[in-house]
Image (cartoon, rainbow, N blue to C red; front, side, top):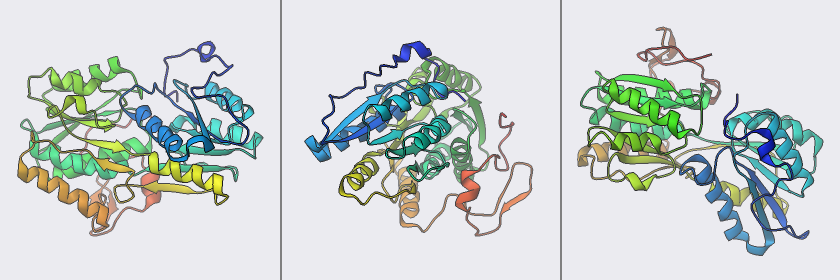
Length: 361
């Protein structure tokens, strides 16, 4: 799967002029591989804010370096190799499709630490994985969507049909359905993480079908820009970043990916000798998933309901996947009161009952 198709291999410039200053040998060098541009306003922007937080936290004890717009696949493996050869002590690979390249290169450089975002493979002791429980934020958005839709048609722009995205779709729908039994969900697959034109087209297609609340799991502000053209009839959510330029509407809230604490912690552990391989998956309680301001475009009672759900999730008194929940085909998945095991979520490849359409293969 190629998460980004904007650069040809040759354009990567495998001399790899990373962003950042020249390395000093006594510094810890933390490097970051990005699937999109740091100015995307979404996913990559937030990862880069985390990298900058590392620099701010440790000052001249660290050096950060990064490469933007790295396609998934063979190109990523070449970039990672060059980073390892270039003196990076720890390399954060920030896209699902970097999983196999990360593990392949890690085996060749056992003294370099590799951290892969949203993946699950740790084939060498120098590979760790980290993720965020985005589905928790989708539950909050689902409540807002279910309460605010006037057409009973809500939409979701999917990037790629991987578990991370599918669990978000399911959580969004389940919580919209809980507060509005008449709600219907339209899913449009963009098959990209960052392509503003494709994202805008997906939003436009849904709006033409009567959808008036749109969530997305892609990286740009294009869906919100398209919603803004509807003259106040369509609302949406910031994705990965707050996307405040679209407040108070159509952006009525957001999921903010806060990677800074994790990056600061992991680089610090490498510096002080306490670093160990791990698999991290934090959510609202851990601060990696933040719910952006719910604006005054949302009625006070709906805002209070959404904020209570957020707080219950943070307190651990509510799990967004609590039974009874059936799969799309009507077969039982979770019994009354049962919560989804992490393994089920991390391997999720099915829609829940009530969602129409097929998941692309």
